[in-house]
Amino acid sequence: MFKKKNKEQEPFTPRDLESLNTTGWFNHKGLRRDADKMTQEQKRRKRARILMIIIIAIIIILWLLSCFTTQYGDLVVSMDDELETKGLLLSETKDFADPQIILSGERAEEVYHYTYDWFEAQGVLKNLDNIDGTHNGKNYFAYSFYMKNNGVEPFDYNATLEVTGVSKSCDEAARIMVYKNGVPTIYAKPKLGTKDSPEKIAGPQTEDAVLFFDNDTVYTELRTGFEVGQVDKYSVVIWFEGEDSECINDIMGGHMRLAMNFEAAELKASNE
Image (cartoon, rainbow, N blue to C red; front, top):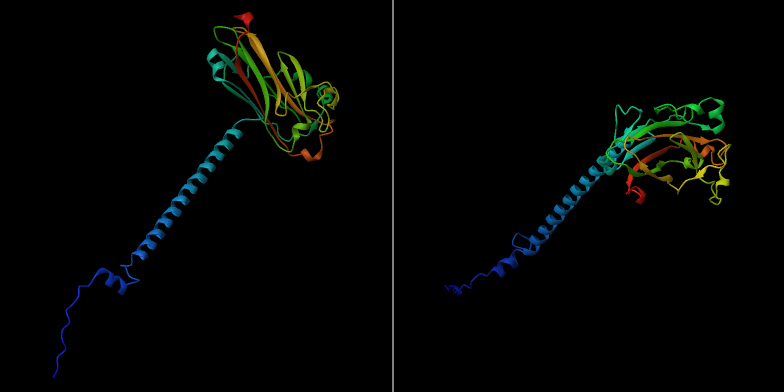
């Protein structure tokens, strides 16, 4: 009986093992694919977490802005840090019993059209600059306040009244009357589609109203030589002029918000 001859066994190499296991864990290509999938999944999760953080941050910012805007009324009065350092005081009362760095006039609710003549006819014109703080009436906003130089030297300041928020273009029909130390000035926007000239402003007794300084700025003015202990009084009155051609049904439900800012200005050479 013949016996098979034993062949000399050859060494078994890793390549031989790889050829026998093309789909197992020894397949380095498969391992690389699995690692790539895990890396991509980790990146997706990281991006999702970052996106979620951004969304939450935006929601918080919007909430804070909402709280800030609802905390204050239709007119916010403020001053810059330099004027505060110089000793400027703001108050709703002439005795400055409760001075503030920010003042706010309460919102005027359910306002409809009005005219300047009605202020006289209803006997309220004489009171617009004689009542402290918020004194809104039917269909108009009114707010009076005081500012005092409580520092140790005179200074100049810039006063700027701006429209900070408006909806439904209701500012096109608005009239803004500003009393400064008892002297009133009425401001208005020019009629749409006309040249910027005062005669283009409609409304009884407001034809000569001063045009807005620009689209968002009602006026800006330099106050010079504000002496120590001196007091300036301001009253701001707002209504929608019924005789204005822009006072139409389309602006119903609209809203305006304004800010009056006081900033320090350099003293004039004559005061130096």
